Amino acid sequence: MTARRLRRLIPTLFALAALSLVSAAGSALAADCDIDIRDGSDYLFDFNSEVSDPPRVAAAYGGVFEGEAPGGRDDSWDDWGGIFVAAPSADLAGLGVEDRYLGPNACEVVAGGREVRYPVVPMKGLEVQHAWFVDPGPLNGARILTVLRNPGAAPISVKLVQGFPLEGFRDEVDLGSDSGTVLAATSDGTRVATPTSTWGVTTDHEPLAGSIDFDPALAHVWDGPGGATRVAEVFAKTGDERLYWTWVATVPPGGTSSFISYEIQATVPDASAIAEVGQASAQAQARQAQGPASLYQGMSAAEIAGTMNWAHPAPTATIKSVAGANSGRPVLLDGSGSLGAAGLPQCGIVSYAWKADDGATATGPTFSHAFKPGAHKAMLTVTSTCGASTGAETSFVVAPSFKLGKVKLNRSKGTATVKVTTLAAGKLTLSGKGVKKVSKKLAKPGTVTLVVKPTGKVRKRLFARGDAKAKIVVSLTPASGAPTSLRKTLPLKLGD
Image 1 (cartoon, rainbow, N blue to C red):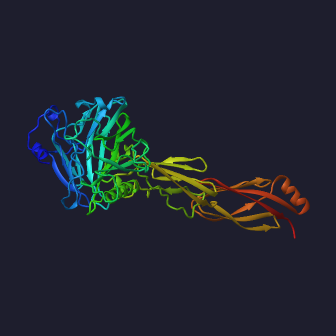
Image 2 (cartoon, helix red, strand yellow; image 1 turned 90 degrees about the vertical axis):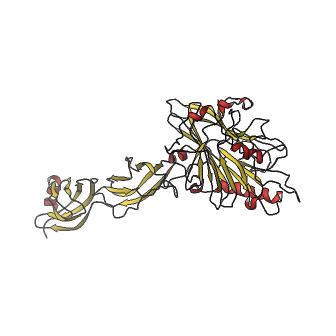
Image 3 (cartoon, one colour; image 1 turned 60 degrees about the horizontal axis):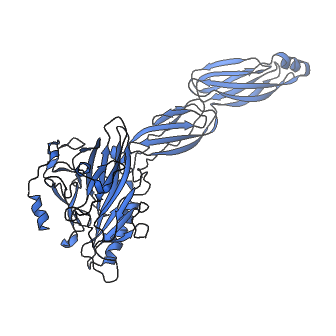
């Protein structure tokens, strides 16, 4: 460790030093970055932005210089790898300084002192930034976030490499991997790292009975559940100093693509290799099962929406229940109680899309629509600023805007009266074949009486035989609701 400590004291100059020390959020970066943060289980993550001169190799730039287990036990790594951004078809063996994420010797500490963010560096037409969030618990370990922003007007495709794929630099940069490193576990149980696995555990010794791990076991989580993009290649092999994984990404114009992985130390008091591999594997599995509030804490909405290799946090669509609806006035559907994502205030609702069963559509948190009487359904789809959508459905019953009441016959005149109770103001009309049309304008809801007077053939039959049937239609056209009609057949009588 002494040589690495001495290197920190040597001033470094390199071509990118002229970059402005400003983060993506616009806040100042602290020069001579050297930050120690412990996770919730007291594992140390020691950050710095040391860069060699010339910048042939950047020892731990944008990463962890060394780690330490609880009680002062030795670290799990010497230096945490590097970040490379290369052409999609690039040969990893030929990566150079131009492909390496290198910035000023500076960093920014945010998220209540839990996250270290390194400078934004222009690479391949993108703005690249790297950050580590050290978890306060209950899970231990640190989240590694690499963000690719495209400020241009055309999509840009790149190969993103995390780790160190080059041979011969073990003393400069590694992931706790050397010729004695063992790939002790993988997510699929094969102990072979492939793009179908999502995590692996490295240790100093085969996890056999009685074997002692000199350094703590180290879990590497490179992909999560539900992500749209998976690693294109992952290299973690027993007896090889290299350990890295790659993603191929196309960043849309003006867009952001983010990639999340984890490094997790695991140690037990007796340094049992079996126990430490088991603990590291359990922590890796816990990371796969963690909720969005844990996974995305401290990230911006754009970074969350741009995350490619984990599922986006789902919003919650909520529709307030509807009661007492009638066709005389529009039904108000209220989705304003929908949430962007639980525990993530940066995830707001960016759009609301409504669709009713009668084909009507609308946008916005509320939907006011006139429904005809009957049973109805409406669907709401909400989309959050964090890149996910979800839907909700509500069912409700719309009553007619009026009801027909008691019918009274006038035998001396051969007419009838019908009482109508309305739930809305509007134009009330009585019509039908063989009856005189009657209309009334109602300024307010209430009960009115309509007179049914026979005409034409119905009147002739009534006066010829003393009885007849009139088929009437009563309609209410409200000011803003749905027109509603009810039909009724009335027996008319004349004489005793």
